[in-house]
Image 1 (cartoon, rainbow over the protein chains, first blue to last red):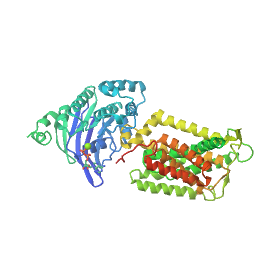
Image 2 (image 1 turned 120 degrees about the vertical axis):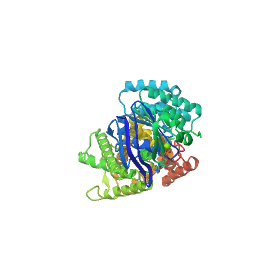
Image 3 (image 1 turned 90 degrees about the vertical axis):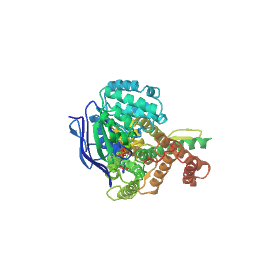
Image 4 (image 1 turned 180 degrees about the vertical axis):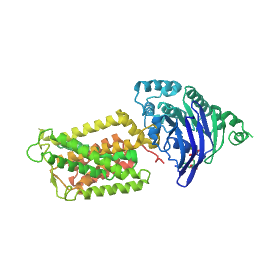
Length: 237
Length: 306
Ligand SMILES: Nc1ncnc2c1ncn2[C@@H]1O[C@H](COP(=O)(O)OP(=O)(O)O)[C@@H](O)[C@H]1O
Ligand SMILES: [Mg+2]
């Protein structure tokens, strides 16, 4: 059984039918990616999984349990953490406080301290800035903080919404390197991206989302070789 | 010199009251971005609960024990805290995703309800009530004509203790960190596993309890507590709101500083210019701050969030 199973999911924003019956799965231990252009419904998918948006119909099962009607804070406790689009760091809090907030659901102080060390090892640049207000960080550092913060919830499933957005190519490379390391240490990842090239290289399984529908689903490597994806998303004709 | 010292003491005491009330305005605004117009009524009810509770405990006659005021203060804070919790639950929570103007109008409705419902004969009635003399009207000392009354000392001490406790709550605890996160971005806070509704409830309880403390202290300072809709309560609540704006609405330390500053300006103006124009000094100060630093003394220029 897959760790996450989404079936025939529909989401509306008022009259906008943003997700029109999408189905996909994320296997435990893997990286799955959802690629698509702006407005396709990628963020809506992640927001719905996290409980910020209510589905109109369809089911979301995490580890066999239905979570479609659950409150966001309870979903985090089940083991799903998200680094949202645009990073969403709390600019009025220090880097250290942002990391603490990431571990909000946990009471095992010693384990949290150990996880923080592990995360700071992944993102050494954050260690130098622990006391700084996170609003003063660069875009790349804020992205790192958003991922680090999500990791401190010790999720079984990590949702990443466009971690490459607005970042220089060199930093994007670093961040994708770290995403792979996170996955190798056992965390399942659902990655949402417009940067199809990077995303398909990092993922095991890929899905292509177009205006609220999944139009292609395949092994990520095969997907990156397919004509449709090469033309529409990788700019190769 | 004597007048100056006396005025400073009175100004800080008055300003402490403003600060306690301003904190509730600013905390709710910080999280929900709306002005809780019913907040000054909570302050008024704090005074009324104090009278009622002291009466029920048999402290309306004779000489109550010295510690009686602490019991009444805490009981009034608890009663208003509960009331704040209920108001948020019944009036504001159902409007969580409604346009802000709806919430604002509801707040005005809650305010009118509390003022008029309170005047019903079976509730508080519409004749002034005498506040039991929980704090005897004595001077702790008179030095060269400067009088430090016990009431003023208690007002300042209680305000300082409560503000210290609030400062600790917001900047020193996990709950406070969650409050600051919710105030910055509710949705992302929920993604961190924070129960946002619970944090909002707690914010209302804490803000209302602080206003109740101010209500108790104000009642302890004056002899007769006027009926709920009386202009004196409305005006004090309004001035406290001005203090919150001057300090930078949404900023907790700003509310404290704004309150004390406003109390000082009002009292200094009253002592050295004309005591008739105290309200004028308050609004002059508001206009000056809005002209020179529209976001308030400690406020940050924030881009309205979508
Ligand atoms: N809060 C909202 N209210 C109304 N429409 C929205 C809202 N958020 C997203 N949409 C619409 O839903 C569709 C999908 O948006 P989104 O999930 O943000 O796409 P993506 O993340 O793939 O760019 C778009 O048409 C967008 O305009
Ligand atoms: Mg998006």
